[in-house]
Every structure is written in C-alpha cells, then in structure tokens.
Length: 359
Image 1 (spheres, rainbow, N blue to C red):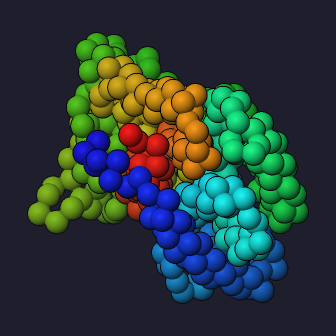
Image 2: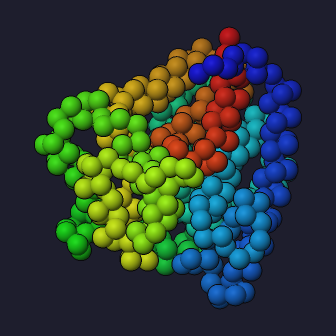
C-alpha cells in the first residue's frame, strides 16, 4: 500500500533477485528432499504423514517439529517458484531449469496438498484471466500451453508418491456436507453457526462483524488460551488472562473443545479459516473490501497487458495474478492471513512484479 513500486522497475534488479532466489530455491529444495528421504527410511513411505518432515530451514532438524513449519515452507517455495518461472520465460532460456528440480520435488514431497491444489487453481485462474497478446516472438497462448503441460507433468509424481493422501482429498468435501452434529466436521459446524446462529443474537454482525479478534481469527484463538494451552490448560499471552467473546465461546470454542480429542483432523477440518474470520469479525463490508483489493489487482493487470510491449511486463502481470489468487484462496483453509511467515514472501514478490509494469 505504501511502497513506490516504480523504484523497483529495473531488469537488472529483477534478474539479480531471481538469480539469488534460484540459489535459495535449490538449497531449500535439497534440504527438503533429504528430510523426505530420511522420513522414507524411517517410515517406509513418502505418503501419509511423511510430508510433515519436509520443513527446509524453517525447521532444519530431520525429525518433524509437528507445527506449522511444513506449510510455511511449502507456501514460501511456491512463491519463489512463480518468480523463477517468470524469470525463465523472460530469458527464454531453460538451460539451467534443472536447478529447479529439487525445489519442485520438495514441494511435492512436503505433501501440503491443499496448498498444491489451491496453487494449481490459482494458476489456472490466472491463465484464464490473462489476455491473448503477443509477447515478443511468441503469444501468451503459447505460454499458457506450456504452463498447462507443466501442471500435467507435476501431477504424475504427486500421484506416484502421494497416492493415499490424494485419494483422501475426495472424502473431505463429502464429510463436510453430509455429517452433522457430533459426527460432523468442525469447519462446517462453525461456518453454519456464523451464517445462521450468530445473526440471530447480533444482527449487525452480518454487516460490520463482531470486531477484530472477537470470533475465529488467530488473535481470538490466542486470547482464548485454547490455541496454546488446549482445553486442559488454557494459556494466553504473558500477563493476559484468557478471555473470549461470548458468541465465540458458544459457537467456536465449544466446537473446538468437543473435537479436541480427534487426532486425525487436519487443517481442512479445523473450525477456523481466514474467510470465516474476515466475515465474522468485519462483516460483509470487510469481506467486500477484500474482494475489491483482489479484483483491483486483476483489473489493473489486464489493463497493463493490453498496453504492454515488453515480455517482462506481461510475465510480471501473470505473476501478480497467480500469487494474488493463491494468497486469496488460502483463506479457505486456515487463518493464513495472520501467519506472516507463510504469505509475506509472496507479498514481497508481488511487490517486485508490480514494480516491473509501473510507469
């Protein structure tokens, strides 16, 4: 919001950052592959929970930290991948593309399937939104075909290494829709509470929300004490007594406690995610502002492309499209918008991309 993007407009700066990032991507990829192979040696499979071990330098030791380090690693690697794809297409030279292989393999072996799926959706959405224009000697249609083939090729090792995890994805939407009550999914229960029960007790919440930190955001979870200490030993931040909004207590934390002993639930079932947090704490107005920010990025990018002459500008717009949609779609999973370590690198890369087509 406050950076003068035009100061970043430089082919030399873009190339230097990309080359440096390529080294980081290669190094992190090698570490991630080693962590995955170690897990395979210990457990005999790359599937199921082995991906939790792939954390790069977010958590370097071989045993998994069993925290959010694994998704943070994967999100950062996907952000770097977009930057490097733009760099290679900009140069029109794939001689050193092999340097990306360890990084791409580590993303797959990290097995954060919701991120991989949302990234593919974001990429496909960006390709649909990208107008067909000439990009130097080739048209953007050629670029689209190459990226689509890349997605197809990427699905092969995903299916090969993560067959059981992939097969389990189809069960999640079915369980969310069909199960009710104590047999239900926490995410579905809390969402229904927010949409239909909360407005009965606080009608204004639909439009303006309950206020920051008052329902399902990470701030609210931390203030409840359940996020750190759990139901048995609630623990908030130092010098702050655990506290929660009565509506959050009734419609979020009671559900959280009810399912606290279910150890097989992953992030897809958790009763909190950024879309829900924005809607419940800032209302329809807040969620509409989020949509406005995302839409403005897309509309401005399309205007730029129709006037753009350089390959760099077009690739930069595509990069903004992919990462903006990717970050936006992450809001459907857990409270990613409040986990700075997971999304800030992609935001910095968006800033770099935007600098390449600022006047």
